[in-house]
Amino acid sequence: MALPLHREARETCPNQRPEGGHTGLWFDRFFSAYLDATEATDGEQRVLSPFRCPERPEDKKAWADAKNAWIRGFDGSQVGDAMLIARHLERRDALIRALEGCTASFQTDWHFVTGLGIEHPVENGMAWHPTLGVPYLTGAAVKGMLRAWCEIWEMLDGETIRRWFGPSTDELKQGSSAEAGAFVFFDALPTAPVRLKADVMTPHYGEWYAEGDRIQEPAAEPERVPADWHNPNPIPFLVVDRIQTFCFAVAPRFPREGRSELDRVFELLGKALSTMGAGAKTAVGYGRFEEAASSRLKREEEAARRRELQQREDEARKREEEARKREAQLAAMTVHERLLYEAKSRISSMEVRLQLDKSAYSELRGLVNDLIERAAELEPEGRQAVADWLESLYEAHPSFFPDFSAKKRKKKDSKLRERIARLRKEE
Image (cartoon, rainbow, N blue to C red; front, side, top):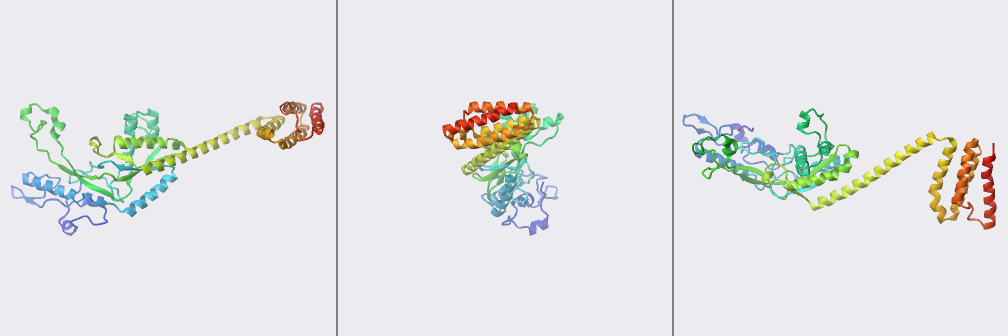
């Protein structure tokens, strides 16, 4: 709770927020609308403060007017330094790109308020970024909002919830190990100076909601009964005005594993922001966001790039796996099995060219001649296997010399078949 300023501070402190100053620091620590000391009925002096609410009606009105005037001092003002915000987002974007994450810009559909529960003399606080001095939504709040949406509205399975966000508080109490989720949620920051607006709430029937179940005799406890004779006190508070743009960012904790689900996370984040809202007072329409069209287009382009990158990595891993399997197979083969494996692989890569271009048969003949020469040094079993395969190759290709004249073709085929036959006879 911010304490009343000392007399010396009140005398030297400016009466209004310094231009270019940290608005959050001014709002939280330099509330200067305390009433002057008033004389109590017992003759003692006292300072009206949030620690001792005024009792006399005229004091209550003066205190309410002072709070309203303080809040109205922010109405319509732009807070934050455009250059500092831009530099901060630029550095953060570089980090998110390095983590293979994604950003998206969402605009407030109406008022947005965050940090109402923070103690303040006007009874409602505001969450201010520590260095930028602008209203913001913490990454933890973004994560909690999205988790609630996924659990209650999307009804995602428990395994996906735990993988994305980590175990819940109840699961931790039951002994689950504390594990970080698969995604890192960054603070939602404005992309430009933020326009503020003064708002007001008028709580009705506070004692009814708090103590209504304790009523024994309604006629004897009129202050607890929900009725039209109450005189509710309007409470001022500060909000972010509509059509203010905030940048939301999420990155996979482990890019290779989380990249494929990042698009789904942002899809659900957009639904949660536009339907449920973020921050405080979402039940009455505050905190709704809609994604900007330019942001959606950029995010879709980035999603396409991630899918392409994922596909290339998957294909590379597949090739590596096939290469490892091939090496393992080759290591387990005999010499003649390895020769035949290599020859079959080369022939398979040549089949299309052999059908379209007769000159490709010269490469085939070179392969066959090389195989016959190397097979001649093998044991009888190996030579027999090579000869059998070459005979089967002749069945698929009746001639290895289609690019020669018929007379030469017959002569050369005959000599090649003789060489194959000798493989069976050589000892």
